[in-house]
Image 1 (cartoon, helix red, strand yellow):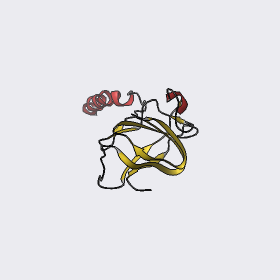
Image 2 (spheres, one colour; image 1 turned 120 degrees about the vertical axis):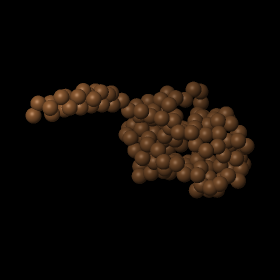
Image 3 (cartoon, rainbow, N blue to C red; image 1 turned 180 degrees about the vertical axis):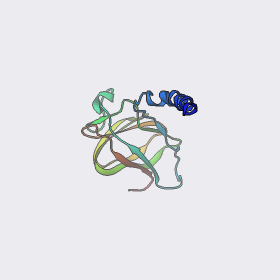
Image 4 (cartoon, rainbow, N blue to C red; image 1 turned 135 degrees about the vertical axis):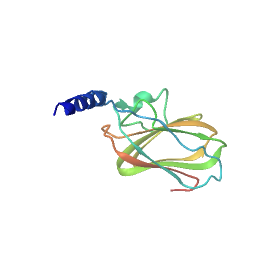
Length: 151
């Protein structure tokens, strides 16, 4: 039985770092595919998880188009680039509850709220950052879609 004590002890030392690793949540920004008129496939669909503890209103510097309500992460959930201006583009977040959508881009800051929060219309060329939050900051799965047609 003595020969087993050493391998078991070594296994315990090998696993110790795993048990003591911090379990801090990691929120990553997802870079979405760049879009230009007549992109394919249409719609582009992505999945994500909303929530956080930062009031969306605190992420707005200056005046926003729409009311920024709810809580999200400090960093945007997604970002993407519009390579050429659109006469019409729709960005929609949907799921099984109400969401808050905050978009910062070269032509302003926009906020929308609701079960199917949507920002649609003309989009200027440039980089856009997207935050998705909920009223109470709860972590919730959502679907984000980008389309050149009304969704």
